Image (cartoon, rainbow, N blue to C red; front, side, top):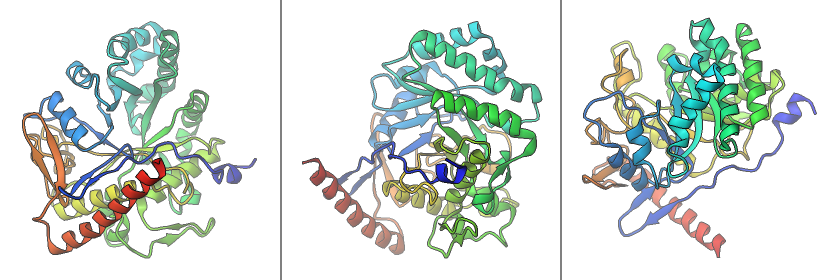
Length: 396
């Protein structure tokens, strides 16, 4: 089977959407279709126990942390929330030593599993775009050592190992069918993809249409990157129609993998989001754009959408992020991706409002939205109700 045929192979959806709707209170709760990144580079954050309550109230059942914080892992025990833990970049090289890898997993994973539902380990983050060549070279050997440790501990059938790759690893991303990796990364990427294929793990991509718009706002259509209605674009080689940049970016990655002989590996979006605030040169970093992008993303997740290239494989997405992280370095936007402020209040009105206490939190449709937003969510309520009725009918 050639690469083109492999790319068009139909795949069974991995995750089902779980929707709860209450007409009395107007609750809108999101199911297993959406994950949220839980960064902790901030002060005055809610306790991990309170975070579990927030995520549980939202019916979000997947999250990712960027370390192995014992307080977080303990708090998530006996919850329904699947969690990804991370080996920080500065520890990746240590994991090439099999004994170090075994000790790390024994201490940071086995101690908490299975009460804490650790389902994956991210070995570093965006190592492909680092200038540390030794770190790049150590990535796959470290992943191999850690997988061997999982096998030794009998955890390999429950937990997979991968890493989040930056879109900066692509040499070409437009049109999607021309997607390819940078030539200098091809040897490493081939080794990495072979590991994923052998261990049946997904390829994770951090994809931010925001950056494309910020860098070229006169040529990149705002509605296209915000997932708003627009004319979109047609790939001249596949004739597939794309109505948003996020799906085009994902398919470009799939084509890039296929060029190396690995077109069948699932691709997940490990990070995507939009900043609600930025510096003067960060075009598009506004509350309105953040609200629209994240709201549209949630609606598409409720529809269980796949990309044009893989329409029957639901795209798993992790929203970045749960909280604004006010201690992060860099431009203002880096500290303003969250749905919530560090103190637990909503960073902006997503068309939803937080009803929280010290131990519980809920998300409900707000009556303080603009008339346009209210009309949009009135239609959305009807759509969700129909979906819920169909869902329950199918279960009978």
